[in-house]
Length: 214
Ligand code: 3PG
Image 1 (tube, rainbow, N blue to C red):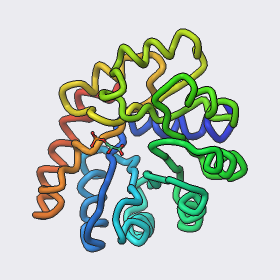
Image 2 (cartoon, rainbow, N blue to C red):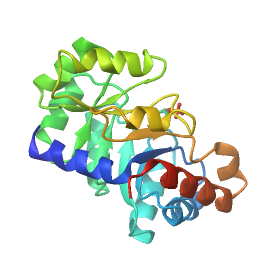
Image 3 (cartoon, rainbow, N blue to C red):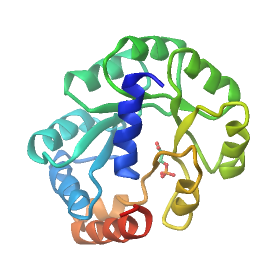
């Protein structure tokens, strides 16, 4: 793995569970991040799926220094540049295009492209990305598919995301080539909408207690 990818692997591993955040209202960003951090969840992926995503990530970076903020749903080189501009700590994509892989390889931002097949993984590895997001993890064959990839690609490491929740996160994390799991289950849209920060913190505490090695 490249140094940049080693760094990202260590960062994601330290998080263990990476919440995938979709923030609709800017005012929710900081209280949401504080609720996650209070529950022991520090490594956060703010997805570029809403108009306020970048200002939301900026606000968290400025006001919640304990949080390690990455940008998700990076779809192209412009998104990657936007993540770099706000000093995000890492970038994650659900997939990869030749354009994005080239830009990410040239960038200093630690980055994980998304893959779901052997050929996609080979393309990512050809650009230096041995750590990828396996997406959508459950829908693409689940743990059996990941084990299938481990044979020909023993050096590959993964952050599986998609369909992962409280019930199956431990099984994914037990796989030797999994550094962390991602998912939206720790920050349900309804809880964010109603400002139910206490429940989000409680859910994070529960997840960390059962999933993160002491
Ligand atoms: C992602 O972008 O990583 C997924 O939307 C998260 O998948 P989940 O909602 O099934 O956790």
